[in-house]
Length: 262
Image (cartoon, rainbow, N blue to C red; front, side, top):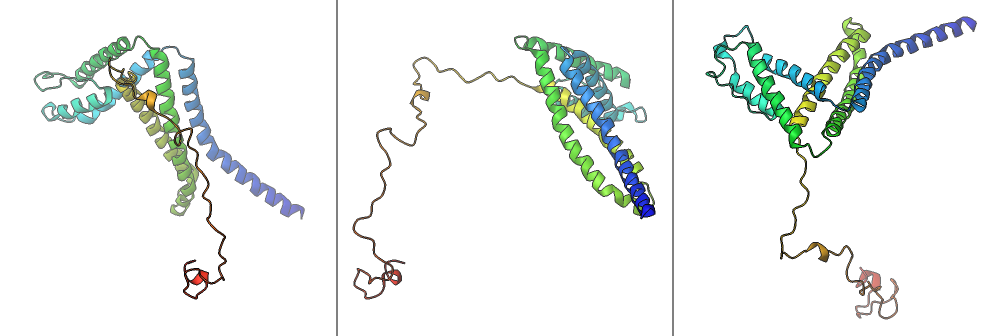
């Protein structure tokens, strides 16, 4: 019995250790996300962080449309121009004549200067509100929404990762590798959506004001079931109740339940 108990305890310890190794992957990811949220909450001004995200996003975007391996004449500058507008709500003139002789670094600098100028203009445009707080709210909302989706994706990955063992691959290493890849995509998506929303959000101007002389219909709206004086009266039966097995009063000779009582 003692030997059997030792074997069972050793097996349980191995299972717990294995689970902890899987949980360690998520714990490291939580530390990154939670530290980022804490930094956002404790910062009064996110301008530097936003500009760093914008600069990284510009570099990544330019690489998708223009590379050193491709002749500059074949760069998709029109597609790049459209993508920049989608990300930053900023028009950058990237016609071939305008950027003739520009290197990839030159195009990146051109876009970044336009984006930086657009950012400063937006801060002046909304100077009547707490712009720093607005940026924090947007950043936190983006992180929270995408983090919830990421947790679901990691749970699905964990459920099916054990099947990798049939292919002579270590499920734990596969989970670590794919988990890191998914998490990297999460960080990129957080940066992209945060920058995109900060550059495109609009503050509502409230409800339109009633023109002078225009009738105010809002005062006539009554949230009730009807007039206060009118109350629903209960329906009362006229005469006595007819039993189901009694003769039908219509004179058919049948029972009430088989005639008019159907």
